[in-house]
Length: 117
Image (cartoon, rainbow, N blue to C red; front, side, top):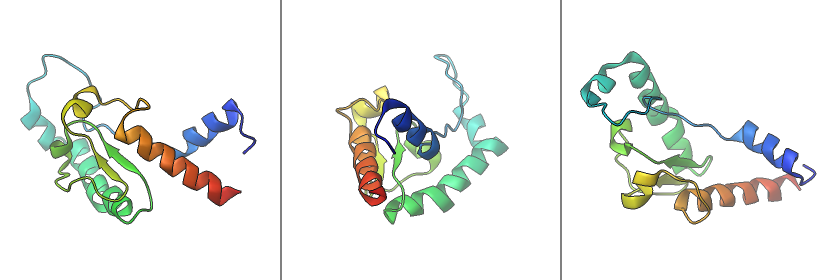
């Protein structure tokens, strides 16, 4: 990696993923019980529980759960490289520089960069 903006963008594009239980935003959506019965939601929850969470708890990946954490079935507290947003952080779901999620991403990137050099 040469250290330029395009290199950083390429690195992020190849190493960051985003999952949403229901990739739809609505202020009036009230059918949260329906979400639990959708096959796509069940598949996403199973993947998170069986693959991503164990890898984050083992320190292999960084996993940041921002909103509706309990809807994903994520009952463990922040631990290792699993970051669970709470309170105001959860409502904003931001990855701005002063959040625990941004700190975790930066730590992961610094580790990746030190390994590659």
